[in-house]
Length: 477
Image (cartoon, helix red, strand yellow):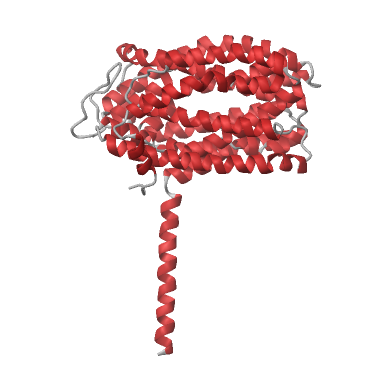
């Protein structure tokens, strides 16, 4: 009798372990898991490398590095909105569309099988496009970026090494731009897990190379070289993944089709204007700060901005891994399923950001103080205000992406108006009220645009606000 009970308990334990192991395999095999780890390493690598960077780089060198990153964001403007539009077109063709319209969507495909010939033709077309863009952007970035760096570079002890680091960073940025369509292709064909694996591998290499070179005394050059290696690894993985999804012979036979660019352009130029406005609002902070605030404040603001990017990237991952699926739902006219998925993931995004932001506010500067870092986050009240502003910006930004899955962009006018207004107002307010003027200006200029974006986003899906709220708390199917 005792033996039978013992065997029964043993069998129950084995069954429980089997269930737990199966659940663990399911979790670790999802795009969300790889995305969480990959984003944590990709975006958080700048944060994870900070203990070494803050102890091996001076305040002026840290300020220069944040300026490097802000200037590198210009490459996101260089494609003038083609990137997100191209990614969506990859998704449409992968979902089985026979072609795509300049704006709006075609009737839902019947069989849903990927349109491989058209995918290959799109790939050849965008390859030529980004090669041309890289040639145009290279001299503009090198010369324009040098102008902004002059004020800070003369404060760095080893100026020669710092300028070499800038040259490496410029070369890496141009390489990223020229090859960026590979990442768009992988995301567009819904290989989200593989994309996050690429982020993970690139981030690990970044940490290893950056850490070793910092310890070796390479200063800014260590970070620039690490970023370059990360970009190379990421592209290699994306190329391998895309070639596995689409036959190489099909890709080789495909020829560039200029008519595709003509149909991409109506949405692309609008998104390019939108991106320019967004750049003015986000990266404009550092550029304006570099002209009006002390080097120490610029360094603190840059660090805070990177921590904020880390928080929003981790939180937004809930939606990021589902945008291809949301686009496919839209393509197949399954709008209620699309809205429910969006609502559930938006709730998780907001909740995750709130938790991370609370941890940053409570522990951020204490940890930097413990590490005896030269550069700290912004003081408590400016830090709290900035993180709250990022939550506001992230939330209304998701509604913009939802609306644009309809292959339209109604936001370009209001975006550029808000962006230009932010630069003008921030210059005036920063000159008078310093840091608080810089932080308040974007919020003042974005209030109306945020209301407009949310209104349009809600109108792009069939659920009422109440139904969307109820759907957010339902268990995802």
